[in-house]
Image (cartoon, rainbow, N blue to C red; front, side):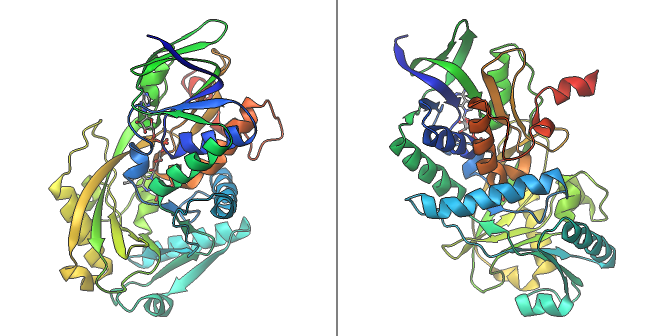
Length: 391
Ligand SMILES: Cc1cc2nc3c(=O)[nH]c(=O)nc-3n(C[C@H](O)[C@H](O)[C@H](O)COP(=O)(O)OP(=O)(O)OC[C@H]3O[C@@H](n4cnc5c(N)ncnc54)[C@H](O)[C@@H]3O)c2cc1C
């Protein structure tokens, strides 16, 4: 197939991670192209929520990474020309019982000790937030710096600006093979590209790109359902999650009913700017089967009623699913691959890719440029940590 383009850096994948990389790399003056098999934001980044959060991050490196990403996202709300519905509203984590309340108190203490803006809320605080909360909800916590974006619009906004810095974008171009001699040759269904460096930002499909160069990338799809509803009453004005979400995400023990447990369901309610809301979510390992399971949807709806009984007559518009790119230690891979110099991986963000896209983009730009003073430490994100783990 004919040669389509050559660039210093070839980015594979037009999800939020690939778009953020394209933005920072192009902005730094490096010649780059982005290749996407379908359209921009056609993968997980348009099948998710839009929470840019610290509230659900483990204290330490996890929350530091999110904090840096939040700072970059705030700056982009000014820098980018196209609006992406950035709303700095803070977020809430609510508890179902006194045991969770005790855990929430510990969570707040740890996060405060790490210098983060967390506050414990009691029942009266929650009722002041929304009179629609069930009467027996004991309280929760607030993280003041959390925000919401529209991930789909954010991808297009990043690309729009990156093009002004020289980025070239090729959609409907599925990468089918990669070889490396002096430089990389990337074959696609829409022409062949060459580049000195390649970034694999293909989300849950990153392992298939890895296979083309004989490397195993341990990322597994973790499916999630979302229901879109119409907000008839002002039940929630900002992002609300239940404390059990943390338990599900980190695979910790949680006392709940069998269906909630089976489908990994925990309440996440996101009010969109258009006055709809997104009701989530579930966590399942079922391969790449994206079909909607009505049992999961029903379990999610029941979960919402546990916290907001008045939602019983709310109109639901549609449901969709997406695949979180899961790794065993819950951290993404943002790293060059030792065995293949010039080949980088930026994938495996599980349920945090919206929160962590900007810090990932910035870090990849720094790694590609050979900078050693990076925005966050690189060690925890290295690809070779998995090889070490199996030794
Ligand atoms: C239900 C749900 C709710 C979520 N909520 C949140 C949230 O509130 N906050 C948060 O931070 N995160 C959230 N996430 C996680 C977040 O959506 C993901 O981590 C993020 O979207 C991953 O982005 P990505 O760019 O790595 O992958 P993707 O968006 O999947 O992008 C990868 C791209 O690579 C392309 N591609 C694949 N193979 C090829 C190929 N061979 N050639 C060319 N292109 C290829 C795909 O078409 C795709 O566009 C949620 C996820 C789900 C499922």
